[in-house]
Length: 156
Image 1 (cartoon, rainbow, N blue to C red):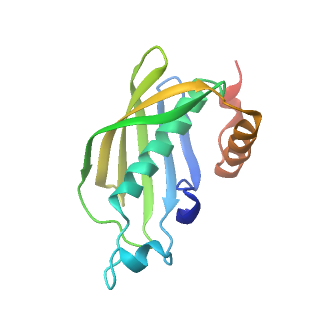
Image 2: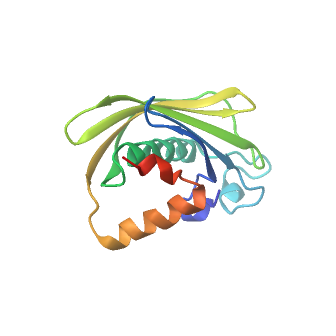
């Protein structure tokens, strides 16, 4: 996890396009400037970053379902709940599944777990559009390789 660059997913553990599910993993860094202010003497992962990790996980699922032909963009977060603290050094398992796909949008539900215990969950809505430029598409291809996006998922 590289918090400063909003790269909150370390690796994709499981992607099942037929079931419209994904599981990823990320290790919260032990040191980050984020923790200097959140909170001194008691560092915890900001809830907004837990939501972002769920959004990124859902985004990878949607990219796979759309065969990297369209880019999902966060549109709304509903029912976000923080159910426990996440501390530096903990390993997050983030799961997401598609609830609904429509014309130009999708809704997912996602969960953050640590050691099998639920720490956060949310319902997330995305709009999706064709990639706005080749640079963004190239960047996403490079990140997909870094996180281990299964290339066989893109085969017809």
